[in-house]
Every structure is written in structure tokens, then in C-alpha cells.
Amino acid sequence: MSARRLATVAVAGVFLAACAPIPRPAVLDELDHVRAGAAAAESKRYAPGAFARAEKLRGDALAALDEKDRAGAQILGEQAVAAHAHAHAISRVARAEAAEAEAKAQRSAGEASLAGLEAEQARVAAEVDALDMRIKVARDAQPVVPSGKADADREKARLAAARSLALQARLLCGAARLLTAPAPAGNPQPDGTQPSSAQPGAAQPSAAQPGAAQPSAAQPGAAQPSAAQPSAAQPSAAQPGAAQPGAAQPGSASLAAQLDEATAAIKKLDADLAEAGVAGRAIPAPIDQASRARAGCLAALTAARRAATPVTRAPGAGDALLAELSAAGTWSPVRDDRGVVVTLRGLFAGNALTKTGEARLRDLSRVVAAHPAFPVAVVVHTDREISAREEPAWAARADAVVRALDPAQGASAAAAPQAPRIAPFLAGSAAPVVDPGGSERGRNARVEIVFVTPETL
View 1 (cartoon, rainbow, N blue to C red):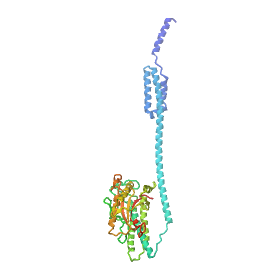
View 2: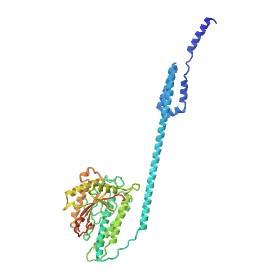
View 3: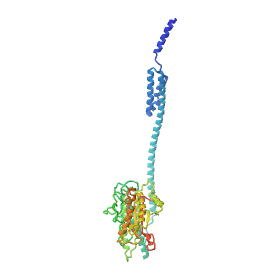
View 4: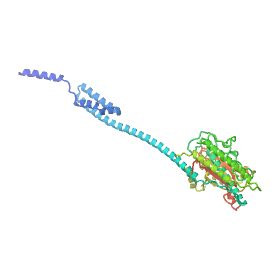
């Protein structure tokens, strides 16, 4: 072949090479394979932002290839493959987090279901324990044996004991009525709920309040609630023993009926005590009747506490208050069937509170304010029998103690927006702590501040 022909072929080859298309980089084929797989579908679902970035790099790579920029297409394609791998890693993290959230939700639902089952189990167990206790009490109960006749000295002692039991019955029924009475505005119920009533002030029984029947002049030493304070919520006198409106206690109708029955027993006991106390009449002292009256009032108080105590929560409010007062080192509290009792002496100079007495009551009012779920009974005891003429003066003393204890009346009013229920009672000389005829009989004159425990002991 001549040299001229070889040159012509070479020139034609050059022109043909210049017109041939640029070959597609292999990385773009790999990129198509990656974006068609399951990993890319998962990335598109759980990491849409990262998947969109990888798709943008792929589009840029294809655009560079269309512009004959093979090197640029190669670089952008490799970046797109790496971006898809990054998106897949992010999607795996997102999928794990979603699975973790779902597992936590299932765990929370399971824990809630378990808590409900445990609460139901606790309720059923408490009911079983209560039934077992009732069965045991019924099985072990001894029939009441009548006291029978006795000589004159023993009958006199029985009469004094019956009067003391009658006093205890009144105080127990009074405590039960404090628990079932409407709570003042903002005052929490024993179960922690807020009452709906908006009665201002402390709920205090008036002299005609059911459950605290006044004795006749021939029967000294019986408990009488003194005159109510101006801020007191007065119960209606039209229905003796009727359920107080707004009490909202479980089984309030049955509690009211039980209290009515106990009150009726006290009234009958009052009449029998008055008759037995008449000089010259040989009538047996109603000691058995007094015991039954006290038992009836204690049963009513226990029923009121059980109605307000959640079976799924262990009681302990009374224990906490007793521990708090004991830790103070100045109150010497004790516990009886009514609740936690603080006894104070020497509060009065005549009918007025002393400076020391006011200071003591002011300190105690802070405890009253800190425990608004506890109704407070102010019980005034005397060291001798008082006449009907003296009762107003002693009632005024009781009212002075109530005013000093009421947080709404004292310095702790700002710190105690909740008004506790405080009720005064005159106990007379029916419950002496020392010999009424001895040299220390003055110790019988005292004031008991009773924090009525709102739940079962």
C-alpha cells in the first residue's frame, strides 16, 4: 500500500474516533444496582433525607456523562454509591430506634396492666383479710353477761363508770361526725381528693348537734359541744342525725343510720343515768347499757374510717403525726380510739388564755395547719362538777382554744389556706385522771386536743 493511501486511512480513523460515544463508567451500573436493591428501599422509608441526597448525586453524575465529562461522572457516581451506603446506615439506626420505641410502648402497656392486676390483687387480699378478721371476731366473741345486782358502794362505782363510758361514747360519736361532716373549702379528704363544697371556716357542731346530746343538770360531767364559732358551718337541726350534705363518703347513708342508732342509744343512756343519779332511788346503774353505747359509737367511727381508707394504700397518717409530735419533745402525745391526743394544762387565768397558753396553742396550730385532713376535737375537762350556770363560762374557754388553734385566725393563716374542722366539747368531770378527792385533783382540769385519725389504724 502506498504511503498516500496509508495517510488517508489514518485520517479517516482519526475522524471516526472523534465521532464515537464516550463509554458509560462502570460505577454508574453499580449505582443502578444499588438503588434497585432492598437497602435503598429501606433507606427511602427510614432515611428519606439521606436517600434524596444520594439520588441528587446520581442525577449529577448522569448530567456530567451527558456533557461528555466521563471523569466527573465517575467521581459523582462513586459519591452517589457512598451516599446510598450512608443512607442505608442511617436507615438501620432509625429502624432500630423505631423498634426500641415500640418495645418501650409495649413495656409501658404491660407495666400498666401489671399495676392494675396488682392493685386488684391487693384489693381482693384486703377484702379477704377483712372477712377473715370478721369471722375470727364473730367466732371468738363472748356473749355479754349482765352485771347483776351489787351492794350500794359498787352501784355507786358503777354509776361513775357508766358516766365515764357515756362521755367516751359521746366523744367517739363526735369524732365520727367530724369525719363524715362536709370538709371546708380546699380541705383534702382522707383519701386525698378535693371536696366540692365551698364552705368557709371550720365545721364545728353547735349545742344542738346530733350525736352530742346535752345532759340534764342532774347529770354532770357529760360531754357537750360548746357554742360554735362565727365561721363555723352549722349543721341543720331539722333532721337529727341526718347525713350531712356534701360528705360524699362511700356508704354515707349507712354511716348516717349507724350514727343515728348510736346517738339514740346515748340519749336513752342519758335518761337512765339521770334517773339512776336521783338521790334516794335504788335504781341499778346502767353500766351494761353504757358499755353498749360506747361500743356502738366506736363501731360508727371505725366504719367512717374504713369508708375513707383506700384498700390499696397502707394507712400511716396517724403514725406519721404521732411521730412528728413525739419528735418535738414538748407535747407528750398519746393515742386512743379517737386518734392522737395532746393534753394541755394551765392554759387559763380565770376565763382568759394566759400568754404561755396562747404561745402553746399557737405552736400547736401550726401542726393543725400542716395536717388539714385531721379533724380536731377540743375537749375541756374540769376538776369538779359544774352547774348549768357555769357552763357558758367553760364553753367560752373551749371557744377560745378553738380560735387559737384555727390557722385561719392566727399567724399561720397565710401558710394554711386549707381550713381544718375544729369542734369544742365540754367533758365536765366524768373522766378524771387522778383521785377527784385527792390533793392533786387539779390535774383533772385539762384540755385535750384530739387529732381525729381519718383512716383505719
